[in-house]
Every structure is written in C-alpha cells, then in structure tokens.
Image 1: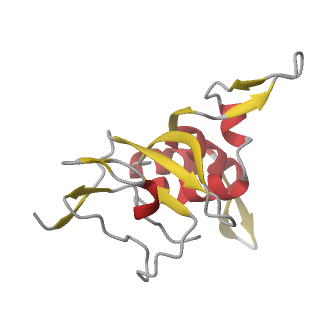
Image 2 (image 1 turned 60 degrees about the vertical axis):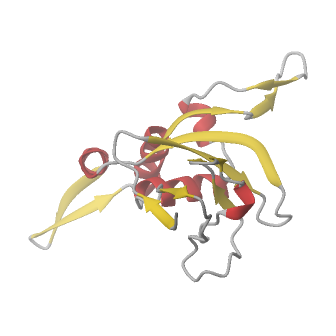
Length: 164
C-alpha cells in the first residue's frame, strides 16, 4: 500500500505529542485535539469583534488574544502527562484539562495547536509508509503528529509539521 493522507473531519479528534524545538526531545505529554470548524470560528470571531465608526466608516476590531484563547480552549479536548507542582505539597501532579491550564501552556505549544486546529492541518497519516508533512519536506520541524496506522502507532519522530 502506498502513502495516504486522511483529512480530519470536524467531529474527529487526534492525539498530538510535542517535541522540544531546541533539543528535539519528545515530551511524554499527549494532547487530544480537534479541528475548529468554520461555524465555531465565526461564532468565536463574532464574540470578540467590536464595531465602531471612524469618519462615517464602520471599522471592526477583533480582540486577537481573546479569539486565540477561546480557539485554544475549544481545540484541546483532553490531555495526559501534563503536570504541575502542587502549591500546598510541592509534589508534581497531573493537571486537569481546564481552560486555566490550557492557557498556561508554553507559547510555542499553544501556537502549534492553533496552527493545526484552526488551519485544519490536523490530518492523519495512514498506510504502510510514513510521510513528511512539512511544507518544504526538509523534516526540520520541532513538532510531530501521532496517530494510528494499519500497522500500529506512527513514531512521533517520523512526522513533522512546519513551524509557525
């Protein structure tokens, strides 16, 4: 069987695992993500857009930070292996997948999740071969998508996505 790309539908989720952009070390944290459909994008955009008139011309202004936060909250369905220090005990514990913790993720992780889910790049590789999905094919990306194939899990280091 040759190489195929399967498009992620609006109601599907995919598991994603990040790789450190500097050391290329794969994290043991997994995010379950979903595509942000156009209807949801429009709703979020409308919620964070204000209109005013400047010299008789209607001007719309989008609060990009709030738009991105709501998109990120929608895109991350769940996770495992995302930890933090308990302020009371000092112990490292798994964090619940709440809006507060979603927004506390490192900026590069948030940017990549938004790129994949808002940009509809959350496709899945299926088949016997693994292919590089970077924009220029150089495989020089810090991030990886993971998902099942007919022969089992795709190695995270095998799939790359371009930096934003």
